[in-house]
Image 1 (cartoon, rainbow, N blue to C red):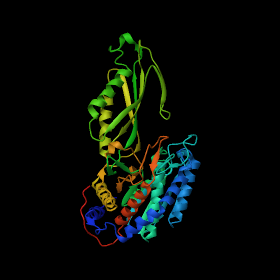
Image 2: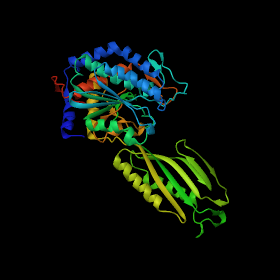
Image 3: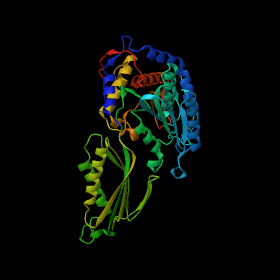
Image 4: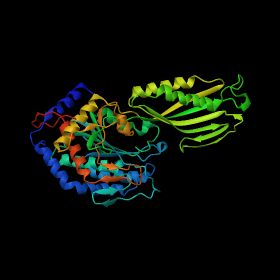
Length: 444
């Protein structure tokens, strides 16, 4: 849970400076070590990319977990594999803990990709400074960054005293249900942590580096509408009414005119089936429909999605949508049901303070101050589950592009940058870090 003490620590941290050389001796030692071991980090990345680990490829997800467990165990972290019940139908998660003191840090990655076992895009390939492969950007590079940031901290003797939990989920791309089970351990870790850091890909574009302090929620909704089936010559009459499709059109139009408009809130009707005979399989996003122009339709099913920037915004939008649905046209009925997947990660002051601290690290490494990334331009992620309990910062991974496509690639020299930024930020955030500092201002 966020505390005033942690807020004060973060705000004090961003007002501090290191001497003219920018990096302290320990931080320079981290930087030098990372430069010497970037190829080792890339080798670990290649090893895991070459293991297919689509969410439903449970064997592959566990195999990637075995590799990461090997690396974390070598750092003397306490490693455990968390199996999911058979009913959840997911491989499980890998957690590792270092029982230190001071600021409690939660580092979040995921083992799975969107590329299942029958996908042909299943191998690491390298050309110069660019590498391609399934999940190389989202997010096997970030997983390797976590390991090598911890190794860099261990190199200077800082890791032993730090309180760190690493959480590699096995189903980020398609979370198991119920979420109360599949995200139970992550939620508990979030309640333990003071700060959560997410290691999905960093963003460098438009000549700037960007920090991610907010991510929107991801939920789906299903609208079921019924009307009286009759000869179309009687539509709108007192006995027949408007029909299911006209009622559906009214509802969707009202969503657009009355709910739309708040920054961060978007909703989409992705699939509509309507007529006199309708089927729909939400799991496959596929349905069938039959209807005639001379028959008033009796059923409509709409499947859509909604995203919001805060819990309050999502709750308010749901309430307004339900009010619209309840105002039925004559002889129609409708129900609206929501299925929440990812909660929002709201742009809190604590998150903003973390971004400023991260920006200072970036500057001390010789780069420019960071800007804040627009959350409308980034999807949902596991870090949002813990955001209600702790300050959080996302996007600490390496620089990639083309995620979820056969063109997914990574800028290999960004591995070193990401590892340095993460290790130095963790060192500075730790209360055990007491190196002398001088006043220094940041202009992010």
